[in-house]
Image 1 (tube, rainbow, N blue to C red):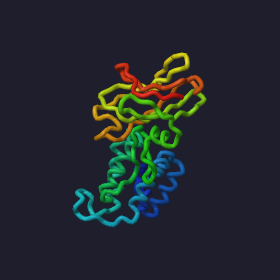
Image 2: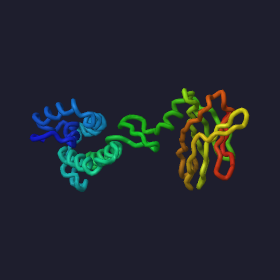
Image 3: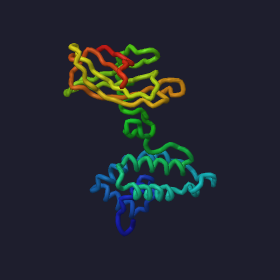
Image 4: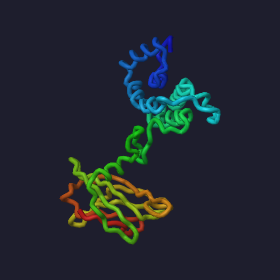
Length: 238
């Protein structure tokens, strides 16, 4: 990078292995490059995870001797290959590269089922699960073996609803439906249940989904989880 600043050298800068002239040049570059600045924030977890890690043995194929330069090379090649992908995809690749060199230490970010990214050391829950866990759930009344609840948030545009559902097996297509006091119905969100199901033996994790309806809480009598076959799996009174 002595002749020009390379955007892909953000990895080397994060790991602190650039020479002084290159480090100074890249530091100046960061002041005018929002893309590299944002990427550096994402890669800070990678640098922290590598701190204090010594060389590895020959048992990790392709990892060399744990040379940090090889990490940068992997980061750089991944960045070049994924330059047209969104940044979250690159961070997954960076985490995978560091895992090879660091001998299984999880670094970078974990991607939730909702598509959000969570730094190492923080909650790996998706946004729907996190909203449910931090809210005050309304318990639902379920069909045989089905349990669950809702967390409701009043918004300027209506009501945000977060559902936890357990005890269902597929294949099924389901909808969360809001029902007004007059019986009017609005679909909040929909999803598919795979054959293995959610919150059942062999697949113990519950399902978390969320969506919105234009009505405020005063305009909602209850919510229903219904299958595409017309069966009601769960009812939650408001």
